[in-house]
Image (tube, rainbow, N blue to C red; front, top):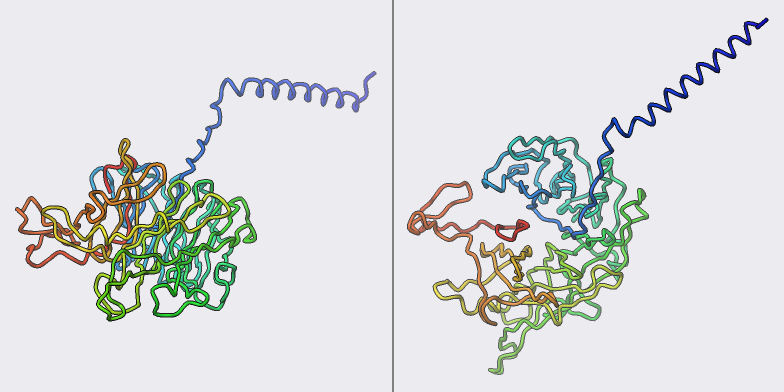
Length: 449
């Protein structure tokens, strides 16, 4: 005789056996009947930089901020047409896209915020994106950059001397690095560091932050050609850290004054004297290989005042940026672009390269080139790049380098008109100056900027 409890126990065992067999069959059959999980390809370890204009990772669109309009424009690179304008907070100054092309981040200087835009479909034929949130970062966020591994976004708060760190997995703020109260601001931590340009090395281990204005060096004198030096802060970063302690200022790199190559009679004795200038107004920094390049408006305040010795168009260089001991490499590698403007190419106007603001690199075959934005002259200055040393040089000779005039009259009109910023053609006699270019992005093929 079998009790009711025994029958129930046997039933449970049979049910358990059936379930075990069914699950076993399902587990065994799953690999053959279901798709394998998609493998996410690793991101290339390519250094990133802050800019008001940036290419999407797939190269099919370019994003550019419009500070006066309060939006960011998305342009198709195959047609050079705007396909979308997306509203931001006021005075957008820089835009960065995470390396997987999921989100765009826009730094808005006037509203102390970063606008986060979700890119829902990056295909320019069916492009979709939407503004999802605005993060309050700090006073006057001027630049923004994404780390090459895609895990973090960094924002330079120029009015607050901090760098905000954003977790891209959650689009939430981890915290802010106080650059002003760090060894990068020694020996006087009360001075205004004014962080501006940003760059992250390819391994996502180091963030570089420029101080916009140069600092007076110990023993230096205000108003002297050699009294100040440019300043760049190296921040050691751990992009897996979810607390701000994983991001700390590690080293100050000072950019020393350099001899400009121009002379002036500074003593009134009738003999021309060499002049020097210190790196100043460091708006941007771009990493290429193990070096960083910093276009800037170098200052030479020692009198007498002359147009060709007051300010200079420097590109300074930092060596060893992929390690813990970066150093000023300018003594051997810096270039004063004004020297290449002394003798223009045949048929060209003699123009100095005022207010150099940004730089980008291009490779076509064995040739490597750098292009520097001259904001004050509306020019794009072309330079050669030495493949082994990374040293920049002029394209023609020591007095001449090529440039692209962004205000060239339109050939289609026989040179009688040029295109204004709104797209209209206006008579060339009225002039088309004042474009004030701020940034540059070059496609992967090196064929278009």
